[in-house]
Image 1 (cartoon, rainbow, N blue to C red):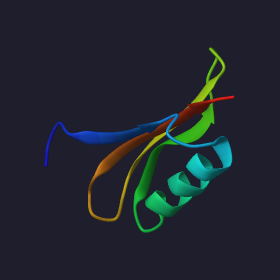
Image 2: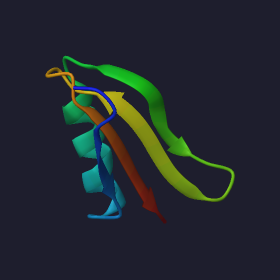
Image 3: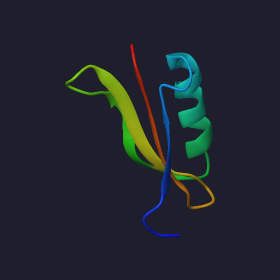
Amino acid sequence: MNGLFFSLLGTADADTLTRWFAQLSDGGRVIDALQERPWGAHDGTLVDRFGVRWLVGYED
């Protein structure tokens, strides 16, 4: 699969999205850790154990 990824942006509260990020990365690979960005939002990118790329993010 090339050029495709899923995003979970603001679909749940910060604790839930942080937990989902950790669960999705289990057995996969974190590309960019879930972290606060200069503009105040949090996001991170990973590839799960099936090779699917994810963008997870939220705003406080």
